[in-house]
Image (cartoon, rainbow, N blue to C red):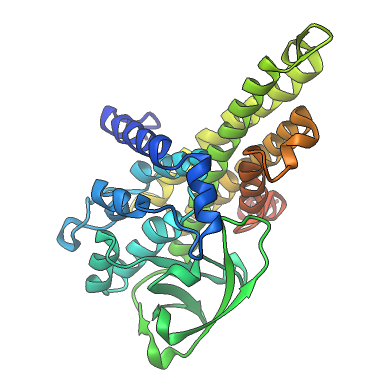
Length: 334
């Protein structure tokens, strides 16, 4: 088992980081929040041009033939950047489910960026992210996955703490949908949980970086706030949480990417371990960031609130830390 990333994977991560740094700034995110569709103009197409949307599609479907180990740090970078569109839902879950379900023409369209997908699975609860901008939804009903065109579904808007994660409930009739008979609900669920875990890591790192920068510049009693031991301890605890969570998230990516080596029950256990620690890490990062920034950190005018709200949303998405600890306990017979 290899836990280190290859040079090529590092280079791809760095390329995505540069793109998001240039094209997904807080001001760009605010433009998306103020728009009807919540999207950053041109960014989805840029990711499609780079092949990000096609990473988990095979080459015969117009994809890159990569796996979750390649994808995990792309999703981490999306969390760090506060990327406001359904990248994990589309590229990490829907595209491989369409491929495995035999809907190659839909998978090819999704991989090229011609259509946008999102997902709705029982494990994620009733609310679906970015359903209004999706052309196709991969939805679970009675333990099976269906590909549902957006014009064959009925949407009801729901409130969301995070304005970049617009939520709806969706109803559909299977008569107007395509059954993805060979696609596994369990695998799709584990991919969704892994995606949320990776993004939790990215959000945690962004909150930590922003807070370190702030307490280094903010002075009180003639010296930086960050020089006080209590503040250092808060931020050190956040760093420890992130560094402990990261290897488990990367291990979970390996487990999901290795179906011939890892049994489904072991894969789900590894994914739950990752989500438990990633949720803990982002919860701690949110608390420390808000406390160290003071009241300014929660104001809508201050950019930190973008990552605070994303962190709170992702921490609970697809099961919070307590839920996944319970699943791990069940898996190991505790």
